[in-house]
Amino acid sequence: MRDILTTSSVINFLKSLADGDLNLATEFVWLIIATALSMVGGAIGGMLLAGKDIGYQFSAMLGALFAPAGVIPAILLGLAALNFLTNY
Image (cartoon, rainbow, N blue to C red):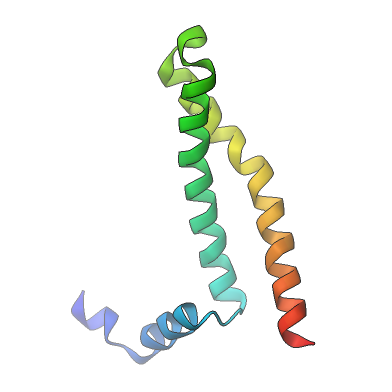
């Protein structure tokens, strides 16, 4: 594992991710992070809204499945706007 993290390509990728450089790889990573966070938030929201009515596990599953449906297009539009603004 130590050898993987010390290769130059991984170090350059982590530096570009930390610096806020937007390229295809970093945008994909930010999309994955945002999707995972939206799934956690959707599960919590589903449990708070409908936990007593349909059960906590089922409402958490539905919330985690439906939350990225609104987040993924918003993240893609936001990343496209940021990429456009940094280039011009």
